[in-house]
Image (cartoon, rainbow, N blue to C red):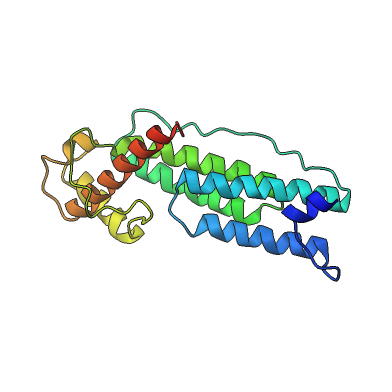
Length: 195
């Protein structure tokens, strides 16, 4: 029981179930309000699972079963279609994370979110070298500005990331900066062994 209290600290007067819900809410906010950074997310998910195990020990309750699921990003999409699919699936995952009632379910959904982002990032990966001095991995682009840039790219005849350099359109810099960010993100995650 002492080991459990290390991972799920509480005061004598605390209601363990209320405390569990408070911490779960804090964890959800952590994930929902940050750019997707797998190494940071993995550390938080490890803590969540240890806390879950401790909570189950302290309350003498069963560990919840969570059905696994996978993300199958459709192949052969244009950049615009990939972006639309990504945003749609991300919104569904965010809603499911917000509604999840236990740590294992949140962890499974976050892993799905990371997989979705990994597959989406391949559509924006640049093959040539680029200046990374102004790129922050932890900062997502402003959604409306980025969406408008994707629409302008498509109207200019853009289909894939290879078209980016040849075309002139409103928002080109926004799209190029996100392509740089995601390319750098992929290189970092490959180096870290995340995928």
